[in-house]
Image 1: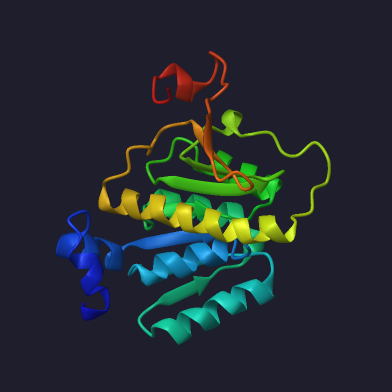
Image 2 (image 1 turned 90 degrees about the vertical axis):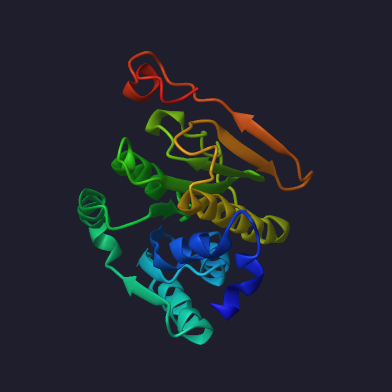
Length: 220
């Protein structure tokens, strides 16, 4: 535990919290510009068990190599991305994960994961970049997703660096959830981070009365 001695002295973590981190198991969807820095921060905090779903084999291999280089006790199980739906359904039903983290920055994958995880007991954390704004949310409703860019958008070098910041902020939220200290868990508002100005904003859920999540009062 000496590796994490500086964390353990923090009152928000302590020895009990550090054990929670080390025994947690995360399912990570996406190991690119957002998912990779998320993994670096999360594994550095002590999270040792990972399930990875990544459509690009080279990105998956990069993350596995980094895990081996960092700490032999970190285990990364790479599962076929083609079976995304079956893998998520199976893992959610067995409750084997502490949280699902969607960091693909692909809107189609993003929407599919949010839909599959909707109203499941396992927390879902998600983040993605759209037109210079990094969005973060915990267990959002599928119909409260921020709209994608109206035109094709290629991330600028500045935005590419900003993705690393979004991945780090995502990791902080997930760590709080594992520790049981996340006040935003199970809430629908999206947190938006303006990469150029460095300011935060929120987007409330725009669900209608037919939405079961909004109807049962679990979102603001």
